[in-house]
Length: 592
Image 1 (tube, one colour):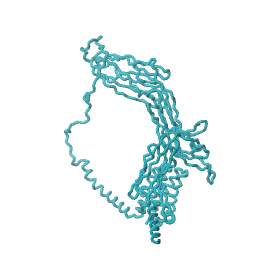
Image 2: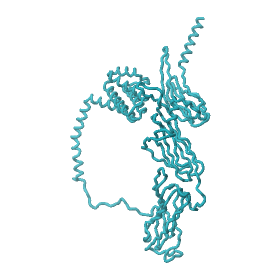
Image 3: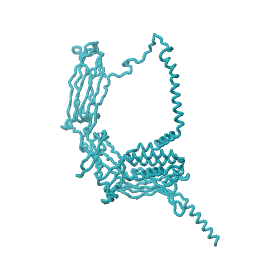
Image 4: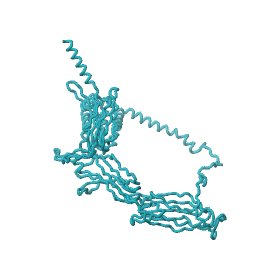
């Protein structure tokens, strides 16, 4: 019986040790059924530290937070319990049943995977309207609005979309991130620069708000019927007032993240009327003027002149083609050079477009340039209008006579068919910029100014080299000064990322805390994830660092932890940065 009892005890101890050594890696979700307007938290937990953590592809969700990493260590009755967690916050993109696939991690050379999790996303759910709930307060006091100038425009008529973020004076916005940008399908679009916009005061639903213009766009519909403007969606970090107060009686603020959307907008695009539409109508919509200008009207044969066809005004200037000119066959016409001088603002496109033709007459005579016609749809009168230029006569005075012409009137050709010229790369001979000329007068380098300068220059460098060498020897002998300079370089090296983030509170303090830990690891030659305040204190005392310096270093680390949850201005950030640089420098001077 005693033998059996001992065997049972041994088996129990073996089972306990095996169970304690078993690796666990699992995924946990806050809920498996949620509305499309709710968020999901998923935690990947492990009981032993590992490497190469790979989260699953959250293809049907938008990651609005994370990964947040947390580590906990505890000792109970001599048994160590370890837990490391990676947390993500997800917002569903659409309704349906989805599967969050497996995450993987490598622990002690073995790869572990979590089990897939099924998630059901339903239609939006009504959230409780609790006046003390931070999410409800945020939803009631922040609004993203898309203002459309016109919802029933004509085809190719300009409309504007302005996105405004309205924020109540009682809450504060720390940061926002654009998680879904609008796509203007079936529109020609142009974004208007909104940089430098200032916060303005206004009203929304009869209440006072502050608002900021986030985005402006000019749209020209390219097809008729119902067109959809997709929404702009933002993830916003807010601070909302709670019902708690601090020791001074001021309201404490609660941090909350809120996803807001401008909502879909439907535009009903009307077709242009068929009644009275000209045969040569090319799609121009707006208010325009037509100009046809020639650079010369009297010239000799083989001289060139330009014919410029320009349309200017306000409308869809970039979305139609200019009318072509028709010239007599005795005139060589080159392909036109197209130019656009168009600016786009909230009223649409404004400016001019032009085609410039180079024309070369071959024979003398009088050549008419026929009238050019251009039609457009006028939005003010909602009718079609036609613009026509005057006929222009080109008089070629000197040159050969066109005997091959089938018929003339007073020596003037009567053919109106234009002759296109195919461009040839060897058409024109350009001015040469290099020559093969050789100077007839020989020059000699010996005894020139350059010769004497190069000869004496090395001797002039000798005194300078002696001075530099003495300076270097003196600097190398200054051991204390070299340690100070080395410490200052170390402080700049480790704090460079924190300095770049000055003004961005959370990013600054994360970078500052990471810099302090990295400095200690590098300076003390240690590799550990457990840099508690007690351990920092003991390690620095072993290196004979003054107690005051150790106390300052730990105070800066505590500031980094607290600053993420309290309002901080840029002056305080600058002070913390300077204290950190000074403390790192002092530790490096004192550490043995």
